Image (cartoon, rainbow, N blue to C red; front, side, top):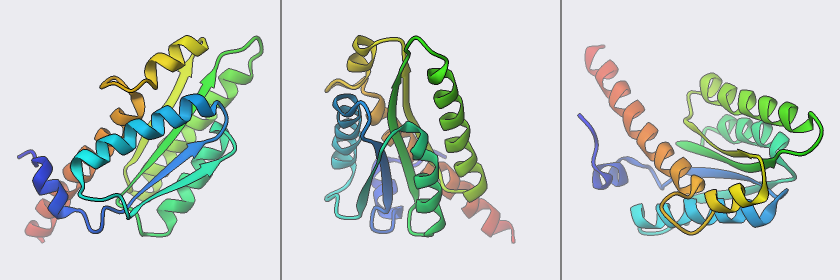
Length: 163
């Protein structure tokens, strides 16, 4: 039984969503943020309870997501960032640890934490994935967050009915 967007709207308490966005590669990350916000504007009547938190870079996204989850205020969290491959292994370390950290937040907190981290070979790939279109990865992270709120809500409701 899949929830429709209007059912999701009713089920969200005050649209409580945190967006953690890295300032590093800001031209790209602002595009991701705008994509997410455009999607939320389509779903909600206002964005008053969507909080945006900016962190220095991708590596800092997990700790900010974890802190947001620990508040107990948010029904979902988005982590948005961009790491562009360079000539050193730095790319591999940052991507791996940021990915691991975002996944750990979701599993440890039971708060859906959407993965909106671009890991690309060059700026052109990043610009393509953060452009103002339906392929925007920030938009996809927002869609995933809403779907996970719905799916987990359905699972919790079934569990409550069985108790």
